[in-house]
Image (cartoon, rainbow, N blue to C red):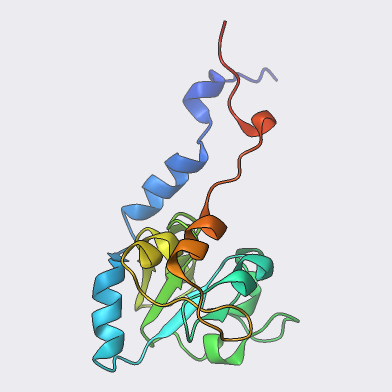
Length: 167
């Protein structure tokens, strides 16, 4: 048996490719539109899929944290990570949130595959929420100043994480 491999660049998808593909299936909501809906009393489940440390630093008031790594288990019964409010919410309006709007798109895509019919992703994530001057709180429920939030949400790429320059 002879295996034929395509060029790596022709068969490999990058992170942004996965996000772009998911965006063909996932609807997004702008931060200011979500804010208006919340002020108007729309009942929705705010699902933040960032890591607990990120969530504890700052999050949208009322959001529930389910890290992306345990999302699928949290959406089903009989797992250590099962979240009953989420499992029973397949018909509920769910807004998935992350820092910049990429993880939330991927999470919303998976949730749609799992039967969640009314799930959207917050475009630009918590960063966009903060940019549109909407409230954020820390783990204790204390308000987080927009400038402090900007600092906390800033990208922290180390030099070794950057793509090498070609010679």
